[in-house]
Figure 1 (tube, one colour):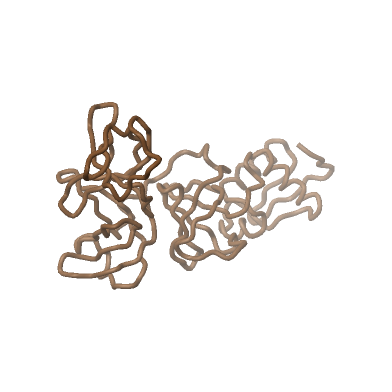
Figure 2 (tube, rainbow, N blue to C red; figure 1 turned 90 degrees about the vertical axis):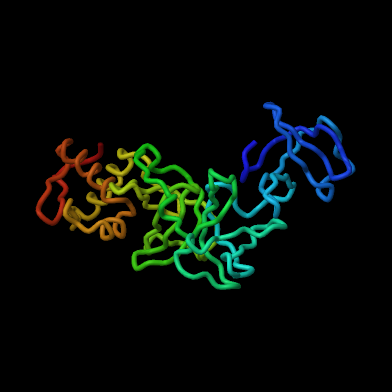
Length: 280
């Protein structure tokens, strides 16, 4: 059984307080009577969320919380008292953010980006606004072009921050924002680039250059219509993205392929098509 997550458990027996559920390892947990229904029977398998009640007992609920263990979400503060801030996360018992886990003092009625974590020494779930320490660095270039789940976060001068697949830092650059998005919204996106610092560049629309061969052909076609492009490996990544819709890394890979094929010449501030170049 995993606290803070959805578990698939078997109904063992019904009692006055509710139904006892069990896993394959012989553990059991109470599903309070208010969550049982007439169509439930012994030996049925049901999905429940596990957390600790107000007396720190592990209990099950058929309600689905807005956030699960190690996940990220924008949640509303219902109350602030001497112990911390308490969030509405869709369950009967509110979710606590201790003062030490608040990046800044939280205010009642406002929404904050939090992640759900567990104190291993007490098995108590808690939320924290210090989310950066829990986001991972990505080093897998093979995921470029893949569709991912996004949680829209705050705006910056460059664009909009996002949480990618509930794991990674991401950024949608301003000129790649093709539709209205709002903080706290979940949507789909596509990985454009994996940066050296492990953060991800994201596009909201499907990327046309999942493969470097596609990008090289695209650059060649543009050169065939213009003869030259005022871009180079020294160009600003934003300029490359604005003109070609691809990351600087993809651009450099494409240009390298064209150069090796003797289709272009590379100058200090531009690349030029070699006369009579046709296609790859």
